[in-house]
Length: 227
Ligand SMILES: O=C(CO)[C@@H](O)[C@H](O)COP(=O)(O)O
Ligand SMILES: [Fe+2]
Image (cartoon, rainbow, N blue to C red):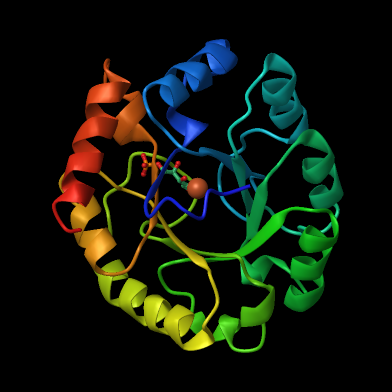
């Protein structure tokens, strides 16, 4: 599960990792200081790309990965995959509200499986989906790109949406993580944090550099600067 004590969490997206050596690469990024493994699941239906499923999540656990695994489901329908990911060792499962016929039921299903639950908002998806389910949400994930691919550019309007989501979290009085995903780099992570984010997904910014530790250290320095 997520470490609630730690103010900011860095979650490398393994979409940009070396799939031929996935266990080693995930070990390497965790040893470099990452907190959470962000695991992007795409079905070539809800999004135009096809990635990895529960077997790969289980393989990472069997390999010895102990860090929280944050499963970002970009699939439709979602419910049938939830027990499979919980069984495979997922810690957090998030899904897009447009991909579920019954959002409250899907959130409850995730929690019943012993995982933390979250909703994911595309750039043009309204936060009003949160209106009646704040009590069931552990994580709110705002996409700062359209889902489907790594390596896209951060959409600046996300900053205003992060502020709105943060206000909703404050108003709820609950301890909810605010995650941002897409185009996060050393030069914009502080702006996302200032707008309210406290969990940062970064794929290409970390895995496309030879020294993961230096990127993660620079990201933490940026976050330190706004404390
Ligand atoms: O969910 C997604 C894309 O749909 C993300 O998790 C990306 O994989 C992040 O990659 P970068 O934008 O950081 O390269
Ligand atoms: Fe993601």
